[in-house]
Amino acid sequence: MVFNSLFVDYSLLKQTAGVAGNIFAFGLFVSPIPTFRRIIRNKSTEQFSGLPYIYTLLNCFICAWYGTPFVSVDNILLTTVNSIGAIFQLVYISLFIIYAERQRKIKMLGLLVGVLVLFAALILMTLSMFDFASRQIFVGFLSCATLISMFASPLFIIKLVIQTKSVEYMPFYLSLSSFLMSASFFAYGLFNWDAFVYFPNGIGLLLAVVQLGLYYFYKNRSPEDQEPLIISYS
Image 1 (cartoon, one colour):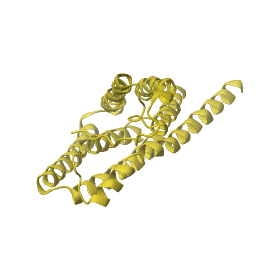
Image 2 (cartoon, one colour):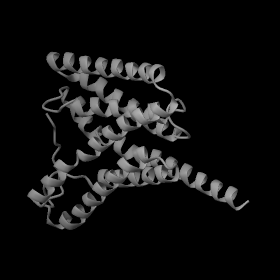
Image 3 (spheres, one colour):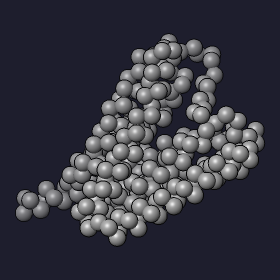
Image 4 (cartoon, helix red, strand yellow):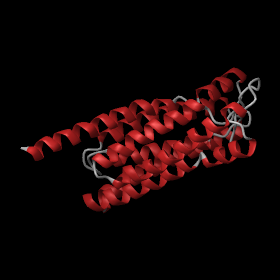
């Protein structure tokens, strides 16, 4: 009786953490909107790079696949959040292709087709060549690797903040959204005993804590009258 009660409590906590993670992820999904407002307003992608959106799309696809019942057990909230993330990335990529110059347009289309083909091949390969346990391990390692590399991307911004002693390059709400989402899915992974979920999100949580700490430390040192810059990655 006690065991059943504990199981129900942990299950409820896991679902609550997963739903919270889905909600907090919207802060990350909508963060590129100011960039694309500028692109649409100027009818040009200028020096902005479309590669982060391509890479994020691939990451969302892999993590969404990992969350399905074909690959792992009771992880459907991973599929929902990453499916929504994939839709956002597809919209951003489509806008980028529309407003990019011809050469970059062709390159982005090629990369998009490559991601779609790669993801389709991943599905077919894992379904045909692996049993359930091996499939979970294989796709789990892939999702874990792509998540860690994505969470490591703010290291450039962290270095920049320390060098410039200014947080103008590191929006507070983006760091907060990253912290809340990572914390939610870290808890979700722990409650589900899934290292492929809690390990990368634990790393993301630590990096988000560092960002928030730097924001608190440097916020009063940033020039108050300086407009935040939009950084592009080539």
